[in-house]
Image (cartoon, rainbow, N blue to C red):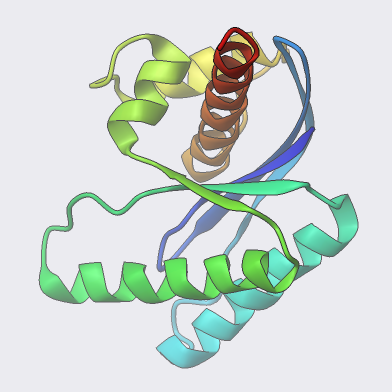
Length: 165
């Protein structure tokens, strides 16, 4: 299965595409959509949407996984992040991709075994799990890969569980 993980941010939105085969996850591609912060916010939303659409068209994922919004320092930040999540999820839905969401605790637990892991720990475990020579950068890309890995592990577990019921 090919999974697109997305880590939404109003300044930088990370994405990661992995292939899964059983327990193994393989990196296909990762990167970020980084609109110019001097652009008006509606234009930045359009650029993020266009960037996610381009990734979907180029790599043909079968599903999309997002980190759920859990906390924001202020209302303005939460609203902006909600808008980014909306256009990103719309891009996935428009491509008829099933969309899944995972809390930051679930993502960190799936990747590191510890739900309160630091970004550097997540990044290093993503490197190890995908058998990469160097850690994916920036953190936004490695976080997106962590979301994709979380979905792969959850999907595999749920599939195994269903087979035994």
